[in-house]
Length: 86
Image (tube, rainbow, N blue to C red; front, side, top):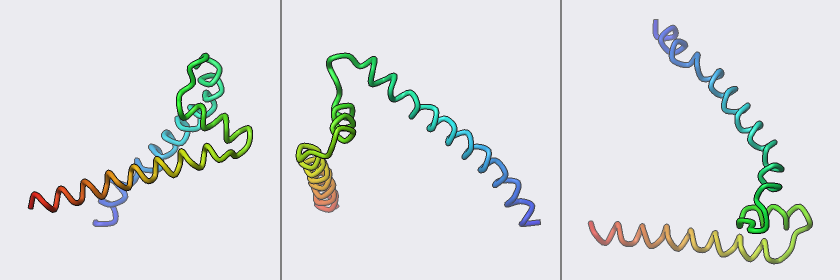
């Protein structure tokens, strides 16, 4: 009985996994169209993609370090202030 109950609830999982996979793969194919339509004002992700495509430069590494460091600082500040309130 328990096995039937589990299978009943697990049955949709492969179907929805397939749907999500197809949606994600279809959206990645449209990235070139997005790159073409963006015009002269490219966003940070588009700039990073173009730099990675053309070759790894120190700018990509610097931006990555700043983003990781900033996120880490925000997480530590959140942890500090949440413990301070308790």
